[in-house]
Image (cartoon, rainbow, N blue to C red):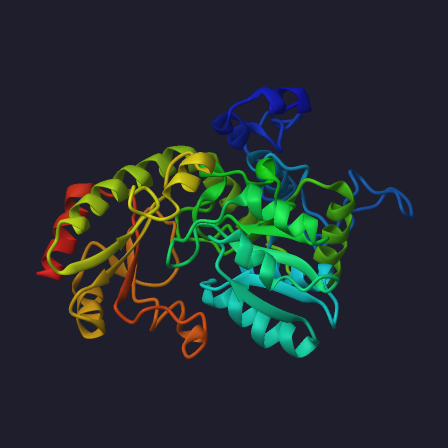
Length: 386
């Protein structure tokens, strides 16, 4: 796909066609899996297409990276072995000992662990702030030291919403970069780079891959100078996906739009059910008009996503019981796959933040709503709650 066609095409077209042209020899419409570690050179330094070693570049990965950039409307994309590997490359590439970052006060537990337990001892400090309040984010910035303002929107697992345009202004006024973890929304529902963010990060394990069969991460940027820094650290640190992982992730991206529409349809039906159930307390979903971030989400998202959180009136023991009793919803960590998952964040994905300012409520349940028959999902939750 030419740059001109990419700029004029809709999301679904970019996701399917960007990053790869049918093979000129065979006409193959999908990128081959280049299962090779090295490449024959035509004389010393005579590289074919710039490929010399598959840590530095692999054609299957190149196709994925081009498609990711197109999906996020960025200039360059970079694929990594996991979402945390992508985050690690950003932290080590864009900060140094003595620097400071602002993170969400309800950040994903893995992100908090990386920032607190890995970057912290290296000398990078952090401060939490609610992404829904740009003034408090601004207050958490340490002028001259803060290099990154790191946000999730929606956040994991409390589904708070950050105003990306406002947060970009806050970060840029302080000379910092805005990083948006777009995993929960997916590139289909939200493109932070078009709203002023500098960097988008993903766990492509989730909605982009979409089938719970591959682990991966991604970074997309809109500034080419920044892209060179990321490219250097991607190669120097080497946490890249293998060609088969890149192939699976790319395949998932092509169907992202149709899957996300079904995730959203099902989530909206489940939210309606939970809101009327006597055993359920708060239902947390940006699509609800009562959600404090609803208006911002309505402005910057296409739809509200497939993630739903809710609190159980009877407390933690009942929440654990509900998680154990579902049959269609699988008890498991991760999210974004075609199958529905249920989990208890306090004991599972967010156990690493227990006892900190980022601790989540003990009665909280998080749902990753899949694309099954929605009546079956509702009946499953009804049995578990009753």
